[in-house]
Length: 379
Image 1 (cartoon, rainbow, N blue to C red):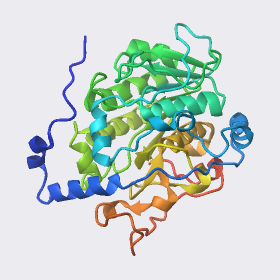
Image 2: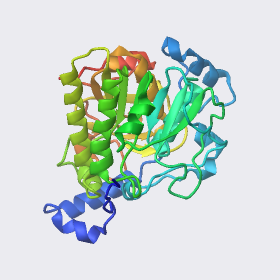
Image 3: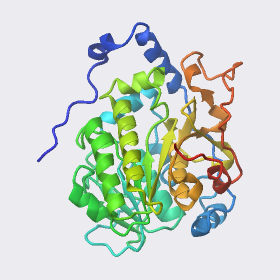
């Protein structure tokens, strides 16, 4: 049965009266503040990674793409336009996709061995995960798309053209049958799907879709499910939450999906399968910074800006490390870090007294393993 969708971008005028007193001002300030976020610089990691990803380090450090981990930014920089916070929120109503360089292999019944499976692969973050996994990390990758054509009417394509490293599966997170087929034999699954105009609203995709994927992963004994969520998702009083939640209650449904997914894994009781929840700050495009310039945190008290390329690296890298299993964490570039409640207080993002107070749960390091090793598991 076709899923009934509702528009995620009604006019603000029809939504604003529902906000609390002073809500209008907080939302506008938050939008203005977040719009000032520019993509971080071009530094990239040069530190050793997990054994299964050593080739990724050498390829980046010595190859022609040294200095950046966003393959899409390198291949077609003119395609990348930073969107402000309001545009980013409105973009939840239409699948975002960037043009890639080479055609993607067609998926039927692929022969990939122990692939990473990426749901939401046509979106900005999902596409970066596919490219990082299949090209940089050289891990077989299965990209799951709702349709071959993206929201702009162009065929979805990726950097990787080798069918032994990348296969494209057509399937919807709302279809348990296609989901079960896609995750079969996976070493890990990355859930980067989110609400879109044609794919389903936030309740359908970010909540129900996540639970369908989680159940399939548990049933198939997939070792790790990585969920791309959002910073501030557990803080409904924060201006950032209120701004983004205006559109289809997406923050509410993301958090509800997180909570019920965790309960499913807890009830399963099998330590061989686990999840990781990644909560990025304000998303930008361009080259990634790498681990030395990224900060993880827990408790949803701090936020900042981060490129989709760095989010992709985190999603792939955390799969290899037990320290990230059963953990939920926020991620952002360290030099953009702010306490969540100060995001809308000052413009631009100047480092004011009190803005950078620590939470005591910051995770910093030279390598991804050293950072993930500091994480605490969810209660």
